[in-house]
Length: 457
Image 1 (cartoon, rainbow, N blue to C red):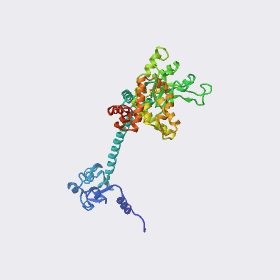
Image 2: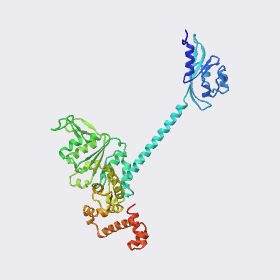
Image 3: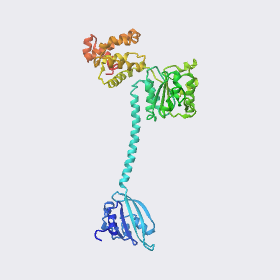
Image 4: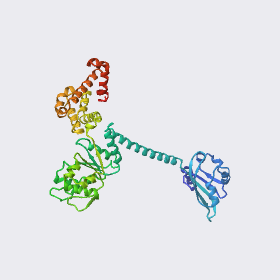
């Protein structure tokens, strides 16, 4: 029938367009057929293969070994991996061909070029190695990013060293330090540097929750546990933290009856909701913080000794800001930038104002400094916040600090502010010496003391 397909046409097109290389030989080893792309893979023209004996070709080293030759010799299937002279890598499978009565009448082999797969495999391995390297570098960068907070202060370098060691250990950590000294920052840093960073960080201020509500807030409650309880109950902070971190700030404010329950959670790693009867497993990490002397509270029977030893597996003492003066300059710039972004402003402090701010004691530590800067950013009428303009108001706001300074310290602070301001107008030791009526060596000494070392401009 005109235009019909017979078996020979179908077979021809299958052989022509198949992805694999195909060899066919008769029982004597005479090659009857090979794919047209054989030359590309093996580097041998088809005419040098077809109608030639595979055993002879094998002896000549064209195919060494030859899968078809192995099949004809053994009357068994065979498979091998072979590299060609053109650096192509092939997986070759050979099969015997049987006649109607079961006699061996020939053999065929199917060769699949896996060169590109091998390249992809190597590339994937290289990518995996690169990803592992990047992961290590990211962890290192995270530590470095956290370390910027400490800035060359030996006490804070020790703090950071402990933080980097315990971050991934999962142990309970106790942070001690004055109010506003950065305990929250350290707790978040431990969380972010740990394997729990993608899980919740839940902060609880133990001093801000009424005692009557504390148990239900901490452990959650079941439906109907008390009047006004939500339908379906409510998860407590332990459940909310999941596999993340639960930060219990002001742990010294925890009522005595709940100290017993917290101790039980730390020992048994499970909780029970208020009004419930089912134990719920706890997987979160516990970090506690206090600005109180817990050992003194133990002596006064206001804090359980056994709980203290449970939460005090690793204790990190965070020094107050007055002992970390090196950080103040950095914090001023960092907080100012943060507030500018928050309020969509573009304000900054003059060098003399920054120098003056850095001299204050800041009894409220970073929190007080942050509040002060935020207020100035909001209330200032000028984009440049200068000491000269704000001096009287500033003195009133921090009068308790200034009034308690020793006379020599106060005079030195005035000299510091004056030298910094004059140096901005006359930025050379010669001009400064002339204007102040002092020698150039004295001017150099004061520049080193108040500008280069003090201001870090």
